[in-house]
Length: 107
Image 1 (cartoon, rainbow, N blue to C red):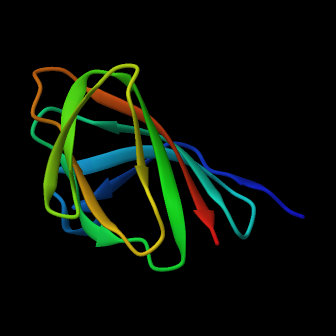
Image 2 (image 1 turned 45 degrees about the vertical axis):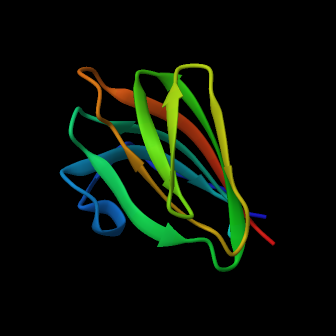
Image 3 (image 1 turned 90 degrees about the horizontal axis):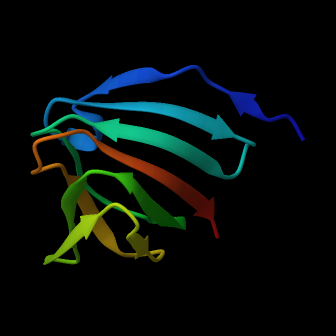
């Protein structure tokens, strides 16, 4: 198994979101681990996890997810889970960077 370690990259309008998502991604060919950052006003666009799930831990800042149409506020220390087949987005509505550690696991 080959694991790819990427340097931090900027993803403009990630999944149709606002501004950009800065992330360092680790990929083993099946699963992805991301250390990510959204500046104030940035977001990850609404998307559905068709072939896996995502577990997201907020390590700094605050924001919210829209999960299957429901708003869930998040802050440092919180965990958000998006199961396979469900839809979510992540929005930084705070005044400082929102940092996450996320695992997207194929199922």
